Length: 118
Image 1: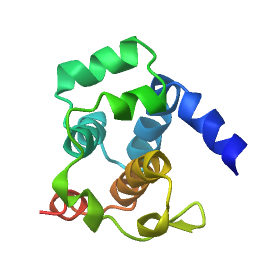
Image 2: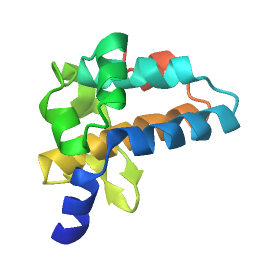
Image 3: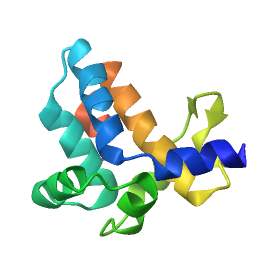
């Protein structure tokens, strides 16, 4: 699994971002909601997020440069891609899966307050 992780870590966040938006929009949600979730999780503001996308930053750098992982990120639980997010040992992979899980919840129609763990 380590090789697979390394491949994901080096993948440009910008290459996955359109898929997050497409997944949300297919279910009637918006790009703005996707951006809100990403900014909530990472601490980026919208301009800094756009800069990361424009720079084609890889996931490893994207999370390394994130201003602050949200203190409530640990409340993100459940299964994504067959793994329980709260049990993923690799911290970077866990952050990537947190984001996947939040986008999933958005696409499933969950209320933003619930997604943002407020």
